[in-house]
Length: 72
Image 1 (spheres, rainbow, N blue to C red):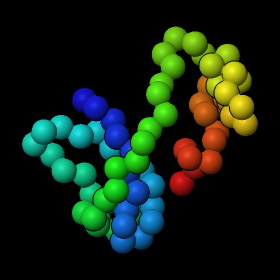
Image 2 (cartoon, rainbow, N blue to C red):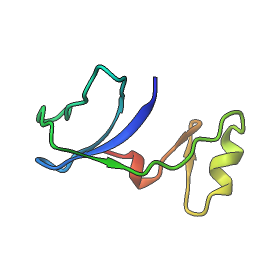
Image 3 (tube, rainbow, N blue to C red):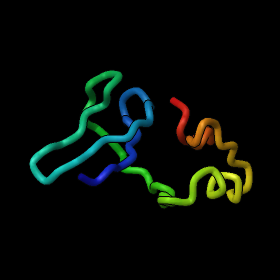
């Protein structure tokens, strides 16, 4: 299933959602359906923490990116 990033136009919350052809996402905070799809940064599979460390300003914590775009 594809994972997409969205921003709710009603409350401003950013979130990720698995989306299929027969399912429309809703904001987990306010259940709003007025969403803006965000441009996601590409994932780096199999590179481990080294991939995050190679990105300027990215701080890998426990194997997960801690960039501001992932904190909500």
